[in-house]
Amino acid sequence: MKKWVKYLFGLVLLLSVSVVAVACGNKKSSSGDGDTPTLLMYQIGDKPKNYDTLIANTNKVLEKKVHAKLKIQYIGWGDYAKKMPVIVSSGENYDIAKADNYAVNAQKGAYTDLTKMMPEYAPKAYKNLDPAYIKGNKVDGKLYAFPVNGNVYAKQVITFNKKYVDKYGLDIDNIKSYDDLEAVFAKFHKENPKVQTFALGQTFRAASDFDYPLTDVYPFAVDVVDGREKIVNQYDTDKMKSVLRTLHKYYQEGYIAKDAATSVTDYPISGNTWLARQETQGPFDYGDNLLTITAGQPLVSKAVTPAIKSAAQAQMCSFVVSSSSKHKELAVKVLEEMNTNPEILNGLVYGPEGEGYKYVDDKKRVKLLKGYKEKYHLAAWNTGDNSVITPTENVTDEMIDTRVADTKDAINSPILGFQFKTDKVKTELTNISNVMNKYISGINTGTSDPDKVIPKMDKELKDAGFDKVQKEMQKQYDAFLKDNK
Image 1 (cartoon, rainbow, N blue to C red):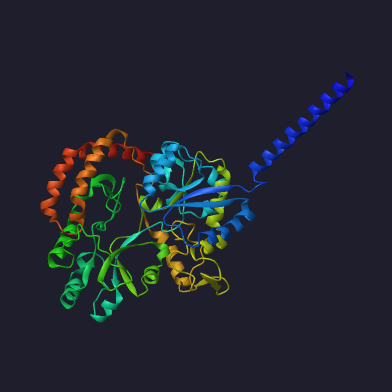
Image 2 (image 1 turned 45 degrees about the horizontal axis):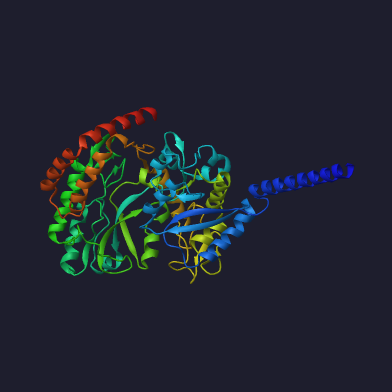
């Protein structure tokens, strides 16, 4: 009997030790001290051909710094907005993703509240962000996004192929608006009618001083310069009508292609099938530096709008941490490292050191090598803090000083942080979208006569519920302005 009790006691003791050992093992694993956890990130775009090399180099640093690894799952440009809603609604256990339908998903609880977590677990990246990023990503007063510090402001520019500017002696020095383009366009079109004077297509939008509570596919807008407190139909303003009349005149003169409203013709930036095109430039483009590198030929641009820190720019690329993630704090730490560590960022944006780039000038600059080629590196805008990436050798100290000064002087949009709640007007917005799809390309490309077409569009917008949406939007905007004085 005593032997049986002794045996039973020994068995219980053995089981107890085993349970404790298992518990300790589990605790160790979840804290990252045992097996290094691999976090899953969803990213938009095409998977680079040398992904395995890029992620292996990144993970060497992440393992050392934060005891984590990263796996990036790429979803194509055309599929991201379709597949991410399915992933979010299914409650799939992922960790990090490029934000999709940001405000709506944040309000639904799909994303982790980073208001306190980002300053605590990503203090360097948080401190380096322009305040416009923080304000522009607030939803109901909370921050759910980890913005990539990049082109916080944008200005619309007319970019010229310098080859043609020099060949035909075109004077572009004083161009500040669409109206100023007339003499240049007329001279070039007469000299070389076979080359497209102003290259644009169906997605073209006329440059303006407006910012958009929804997106620019809707008519609702706020004039950042002259009407900061009112929601207006941008196409009913004198400012926009003047621009559209000018574009229509250029269309009639043949400076814009006859099929521009429906055209998907590609005018490669590296080619010579165009004289002028409209581009967007931000601080990290360093003027025409990035465009010229991309084109492989000299380009020169003239701004037709001021530099604006808009809602769209603030949310150009933000990462979110899934509310279903089992590694929320670790995910923020990973993002901190990816936005503050030049070894990681240079390796991703330029490719492996020694293949895609090498350091020069005491590591203050990098020289691009033969291994730096398309599909063998990531883009800077949706990877990490652009100010941490080591500049290329053609970026001067003066360019950097200009970037800093221009960022400081850029205009803050009044709608930064304004998130319009659409619950009460969903049907109307669908109807309005249908109307805009009918007219928007024709008006913006100069194909349509704005004085004839805008009145027709306005009538259809009114029937679609424009007034109801504008009233609701203005009501919410007034409340927002009052709370953010």
